Image (cartoon, rainbow, N blue to C red):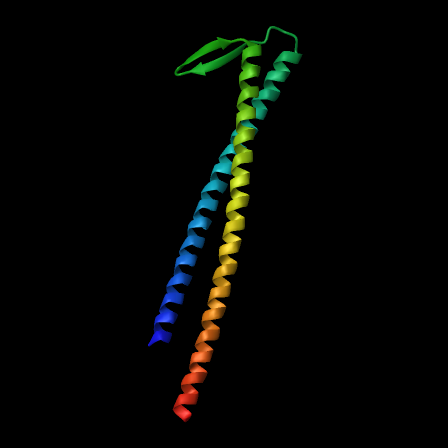
Length: 140
């Protein structure tokens, strides 16, 4: 009877580890989605920066407008460039945070997967030992 309880408790422990592993996988997936969004925003802002640099290097009287609600408002070129630079810095910082979180979660998930594998091996080994013991008892 105690072998059955031990087997059930091990199975429950394995199930708990598998649940934790799946939760980590879902968190990693969400972080990857966030990462893709940030990369897209970074790309868009870098294109805006390139366009602003073209306006600046043309030397002409290039006008820059900003969409505020339904209205286009005139914006100073220097202000627009500064805003884009700040936005790029912010996005880059957020990307680094997300990448760090992804790396940490992947390491945790890898550890969980290894632990689950070890627990399952131990359960299989215990089952084989129990089967041998039962066979020996039946033979005796």
